[in-house]
Image (cartoon, rainbow, N blue to C red; front, side, top):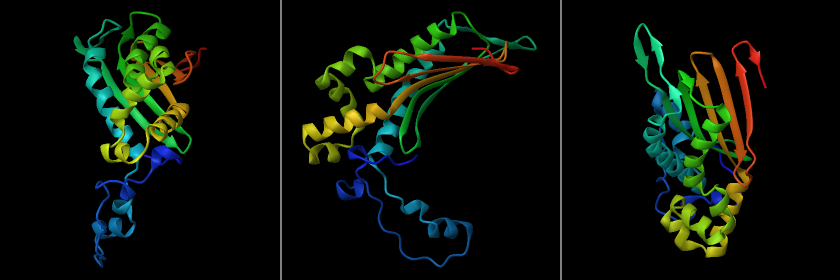
Length: 211
């Protein structure tokens, strides 16, 4: 996960016990030693890293409920039904964006793709306070997002600072739902900026873009 500058990415090394201990010098020439020399294991955890892990956990908890909804038909191979796969997404692909949502692989949809996306979007929006109601009530929004900030961090800053951090997070956040229908080889991507109610829907098949 990439770091994002601003309040939400304060290094935990300055404010909590989550900081990894300094590693002693090593002269090991094995692959493990090379990784250590590359400082991969010494990279500090950020508040955003922590938040994304927690968001991913909560979205994953909802995945089984989404999977059992009557939004799709199974893909049948040699008389056997292949289960629908619903995978949570929570990542920072670059320094300016945070993406949350779900990736779905199924047989075919039982409703229009936009309606299916709206239904699934509801789960991601509830988790991240990106629904139209909660995000407009600052105290309610901050209450939802507070569980994604380490307790030591939350205790070390004011409510105003925490709220500005949540503003920054949601300005950078997009809710993305991707759906692949095996029966038609159709790929659908639905995307909505967390502070907007407008959703874009792009559909394409293996042969090219449809709309």
